[in-house]
Image 1 (cartoon, helix red, strand yellow):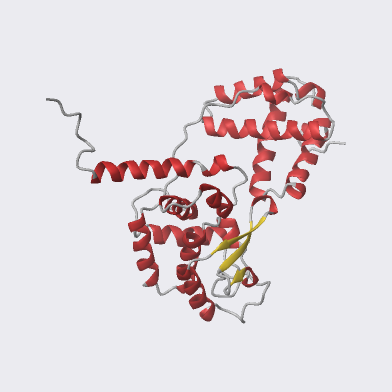
Image 2 (spheres, one colour; image 1 turned 30 degrees about the vertical axis):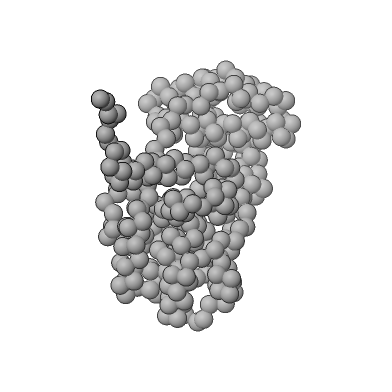
Length: 313
């Protein structure tokens, strides 16, 4: 029985399927709560659309080409940005794949849907000179925790969620590596720079509370409680503000810088893929484009004939 507090779709056959899919995404696929919440919002919007169009809330009626196309046309007509529309389509595709996997439907209808055309802005990253300045800025920072945060990001290329969850047992000082739990709960070992280890050691000496045990989180506040991801973002933003005018100043800027500088220095793209924890080489290849642009810029600035046209006569 659907209560007044529940939307009509909650007790429907499709609603139960969506609930099962979200549990699968969380428990089996290991997706973050943020990702699961995005899936939920998109799929609830889809079900509300079906209700407005008087389309039955059953997999057999809803998970076919026409309702899916009508929904995507509807969200696009509302002026939704292509990237947001693409995310909603990705949510529908994931639900359809799950429905095929669990034999709720026989054929995946979402394969016939074309993805919105997206602009592909290149990732924002620091120049090598700016990264060097960042080291000087953090070295003069009285807050050793903040210095360690920035150095770990740039020295390992790990994600915000990965740094946030680091424990003392994840750091291997002898081998100069850090163990992180990436997307889909995939573990990987990443080398650390000497500068990152030095910054971390300096912070651990003054870290509030008792000495950190193997399972204790590394980064804490003055009361010894784990700092939030938002606090980490503010730490990075404040440090980046001192070396760059880029509008974007997130931890991902340091991750992008890590990857770009490795490739600029001749690192193999497959090795960079493994360091970043990418599941597909295609995701890493955006950095080769950045690297090519950087090399072309250096060439144009340095070669005496780079800007000259062909000589005649």
